[in-house]
Length: 186
Image (cartoon, rainbow, N blue to C red; front, side, top):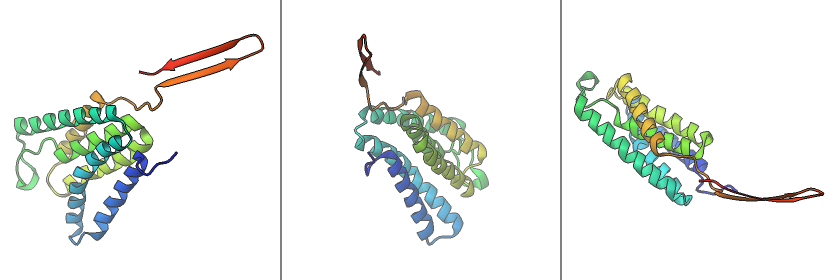
């Protein structure tokens, strides 16, 4: 049964929000791209977390929180230890891209927990966020690539696939026998 808050519908709503932000922004095209990447920085983790809470997937909520915390710790730690300058003298602490690591962590959580049908739109939005950081001249390709690796890696450490049905009872028979089966998935 398809519900209003199913993760696929949340991803679709996120994509619609993204399109609305781009089409209604009164800035130049470059500013609109940067702004939409900034919106996705907050919308992606909020969608992943809210989706798991609404679905009643509290184990997934905990997994998301753990991977989010690890992602932020590794990203911030690398930013301060490497202290790489941003392109075009736009500041420091460029490596890795925090926007990219956060959105890829959210996308990887959605994909690994709920499957590729939800993960593909999330990865597209995360990839767009990485592009927006390069377009805004805040990062180069290495910063974005490192952010994606840190984000996906931190999500994959803690996230397991979602199993809605943990118990299954089966029954079968033929002319001479009956069998009763019980399966429990951990």
